[in-house]
Image 1 (spheres, rainbow, N blue to C red):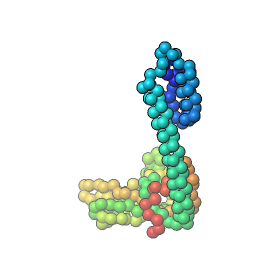
Image 2 (cartoon, rainbow, N blue to C red):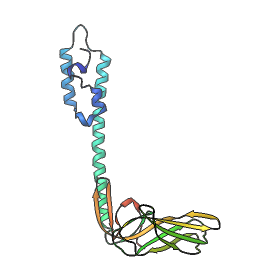
Image 3 (spheres, rainbow, N blue to C red):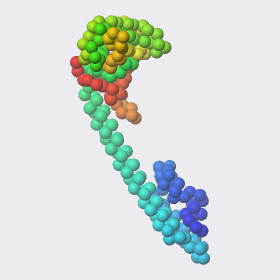
Image 4 (tube, rainbow, N blue to C red):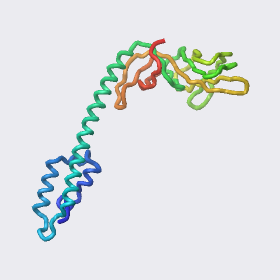
Length: 213
């Protein structure tokens, strides 16, 4: 017998090191296997000391990784709970969502704003359906660089893409877009908290750029 492999029928400590979550081998189980190996080794060909030390260091590494993983899991859970509690305080508040995607659940008026880095002789707001059809276009006229508000009217329920283009002579510039809505509730998901927005579906908490007007 030359190693743990012959005692554990092919399940090596290396496999434990590669997938400790699956095998769930703890320190006691390893010691039992290790003692069984020592008791059953060939006296004429004893196990190499370096190999024993390597196996002992491997199980120590696995135990350390398991401990770290447990701590990280607990920390992640605590952070998600804190995030959810904080998000609950946004219910009923107006927020601005950084996105050029608009999910319309109810027909109505939606407020947006775009930010341009340069002055423009005209600013064009266009709304496209999911298949790329243009359904609404607005000209905001001459605008200075900065934040420019606009509204979208009479959009039927559906998914839309909104674009803002600043035109200056023969040059065209894309503007950063935000849409405004009111938080109506919170969704708890495995990846974090989502905000339910009035008439706009749900968005990740991370997509909120501004709270309030």
